[in-house]
Length: 216
Image (cartoon, rainbow, N blue to C red; front, side, top):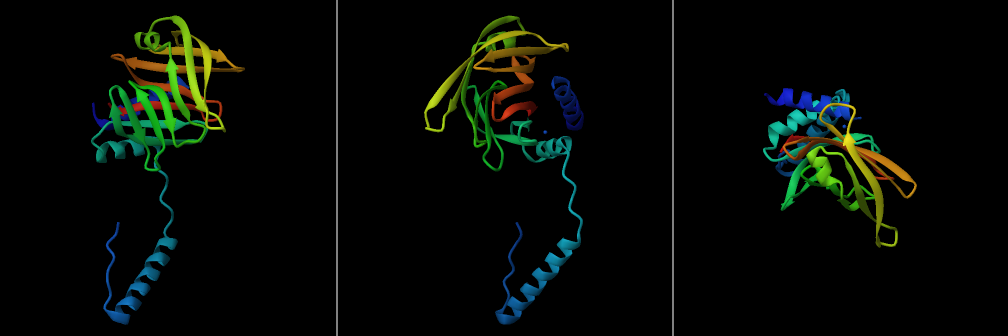
């Protein structure tokens, strides 16, 4: 299966769950003036050119797969209104950190979201007691603890009661949670024990993130 087809299929699954130049050096004043004139012409030409259209999520994913040989995910932050490709920048056992060039990070364990960094209102750590049920595609109940740093810098846990069961589409497992006056529903597609595509709740401020694996 080629990369374009993989990306198209992954995008369909996501929809089912709910995106240097070299400086020249002039010689004396002649070189300085020539350089300044060249920069002015280049700026004028750039201003006259229409802005390049933004890449679609599928185009961005295809380009990332072409230029980056390592593990990649694509994350759609619903509350922030943007979709970004994120590359793995570190691994500690089963925990993987995926980051954007702006150093915004998601921390995943086999596709399960366990933390965020650099987004603001970050999830310090998630402790999903339902993880085993989700990976097995089984039904049952359990607790989920979500830890956030408050304004005073103290980490505070929020515990939610959750149920896990089959989703509306084949292969989809749904985790429904309630607590502290909030409710949310996470959706997962599991392949070989790994969560390949998901829609997971970060918290009340950031809302949901849709995560798809581009390269494991």
